[in-house]
Length: 92
Image (tube, rainbow, N blue to C red; front, side, top):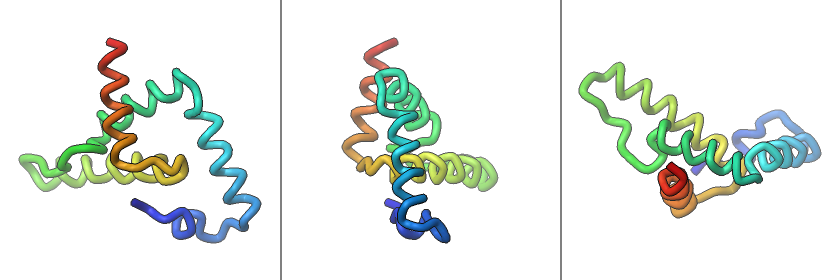
């Protein structure tokens, strides 16, 4: 999992807290969790990114890194990813 300190980079403590609060505000609702579940599925949060071609693998790894960044700001772990994907498919 990515460390928030590394992600925040040059942000100060107040800016880091504010950005984390913004991520929570976006995803802390039923709709936000459904979107997050869709992103977990689309970005291969719980599966391998290895594909038939090297290019496809790199694309999938890029997707996965984007999701992991969101997950880190929300302080999610792997068990949360499974719950998000399960909840997404339970709504369909």
